[in-house]
Amino acid sequence: MSSDDYFVDPLSDSEVQAYAKRARIFLGLGDARRVDPLILEGVDKIWTVQGVKSFRLEVVADEALPHDVGLTTYDGTKILVQIPRRIRHDAYLGDGFARYTVTHELGHATLHLNKLMSGAAMPRRGSGNKRSDWIPKFKSAERQAMTFGGAFLINDKIGRGLTSPEAISIEFGLSLQAAHIYFEQVQEEIARPEASGRIRQMADQVRAALVPTSSSVATPSFLNEICSCCGQQKLFPVGNKYMCQGCDAIYDRFQDGDQVQ
Image (cartoon, rainbow, N blue to C red; front, side, top):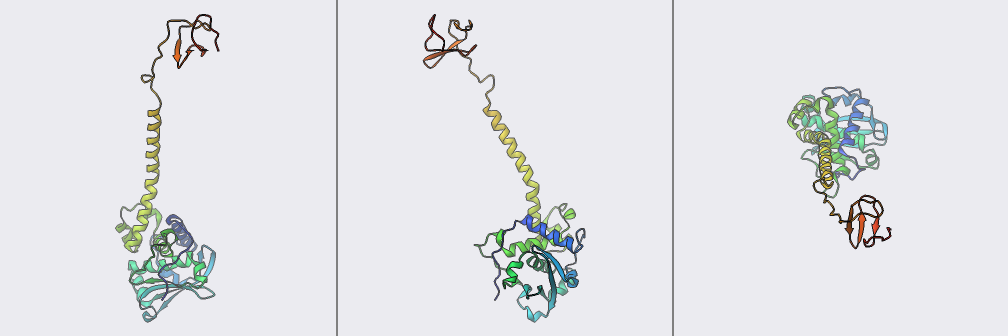
């Protein structure tokens, strides 16, 4: 049985989403409001992180993939995505899970060609893929494909204006899980500059608190003597010496006629 997940080159969610948008643009879907993933049936080349590659979306009998809803492999000449007929039928009817399944597998095709060319088979389990705890999410093939699948179906200009994962799922016809990933990413991007602003404000407050105010500065108690250097009565003790605040002259011990250091 094929592995449920693979350790792959690290990509952040935002990087994966950017690749999904580039894949949309390559297929002429950059500004599309609602993408029909079955358009891939008529596509023989796709953009990947390694450049434009030959591709085929193949619909197979349900019996060929009894436990899986999608499978991505490399057959030596092209990237091959297979989906069972039942998934193709549901995607045609607009079912979110089925639509997302197709673009999820396109995510593997776009992002993970190195693994595919080395013989990896990347399935999408009907019961859900199991992810290993030891694989960080940004290095997980499944996590990256999940993020890609949603981003490919979403028009950013519209999606960023929606206020919940449920609204995103309905608007673009994708699974609620994928909608949650996209929504959380957008919220993080919105919160980041606000958090930075709060941190800067706190730093300014701390700096201001550390600057002594005029009322907090102690006024030196001057001796009843004048400085023999400048003639001002501004001598005050500093340890075992005396200093003139007027001219900064320093005396070892103040006495008439002592030399200024």
